[in-house]
Image (cartoon, rainbow, N blue to C red; front, side, top):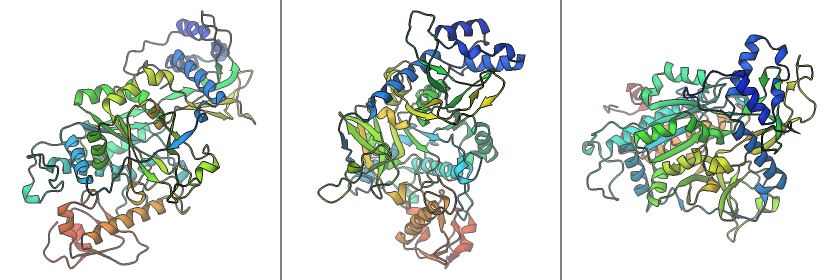
Length: 537
């Protein structure tokens, strides 16, 4: 929250002290309609006010508005980011992959999942992660991603560690497997007030999709008050700096908005996740968004690339498909890494090409991020450099607010206030060492944002991406896919993480699988295989 710590350190809200604090901050108007509130409404207002860190929210508003007005985010020439390497690099990919699995095996890897959104644009009010994108198995986004993380832990368990030979096979023969210690990769799931309870219940009712329940933690995204640009009252303290007025939604309720996916850093700290990672011995953190159906959760190649190169932070990027594709791109300004949103990119830079005719600014941000724990701690330190200097993005909106008489909530016809949000990539400007690995659209990115049938970033396009990818896995392993080509084929995460496991290739070799089916790890798959013979799975 925009708020104090939820760890139980907060005392019972006290009207007198809260009045004094908000008066000192020039925000005494939040009590304007106090006399019209019932006892329950007064208690609700006091509780909400007690959760606000006034120094933090007013300073965020002041510096964000200043930077927005001065155009700080767009000042200075920008340069394109050129990825340091490609994930398909045959000389190094095996080494990176092994290093990532080793980090997992040693208990040094954690995963953060951003899952606060609802599926509104998909036609669902449920958490987006609960959406079934129409694969043959009926797996939801949450199930796909958790099972991929589980598969990663199994791969790490089976990793042969003796000899520490960089050229050693990262997918050893089954007879050479030497599982010694059970591997657990902790998963931290960021929800929102709208999705928290339902998300948690969904995981519990599905036995955490095979993950140890003690390895999964849920924490809520924060919020910030909405502000009007009308200056607040003259502060009563020594600091006479005026800030905006906190908007009231009703006589007993502040107008609020989520603080953006960049609020993950503050939320990780407030909810004890950073302390938990430290106690567990985590050194590397992988973060992603729930609406990517193709994400390789905990991506060992990417994690290993960042770890071996000693990067404090990293991003796996993909090339833009076309100049006007609505994605932000990584850039550098004054030597610091920034993401320029597609709506803010000048037309001449959007279409600029290099000597080979390729787009110059094409390192698209698809929220596949890496952090060393040391840098993540820096981002999450509530009184540190990042949280003290980070400017939030300003959005002027029509915000429902209380009427002058306190009786009703009115929605204005014009913009009357400001919502502030931070983006997860904003912290890269505070990092001295950011690594960029070039990924592949059809392997790393299958966005699920729009309604079925729209044909763009929708369940049907994500299905097609996964089916094409899984068909390629099967065919590369000398298998075949038969049937209606418009019907998808699916490989369950437990069967294969990336199509490269020796056991997967041996099983698929020489067999044909029907479209409309999913390769599973139990005998059900045999009923879908043509010419399976006596092979068992």
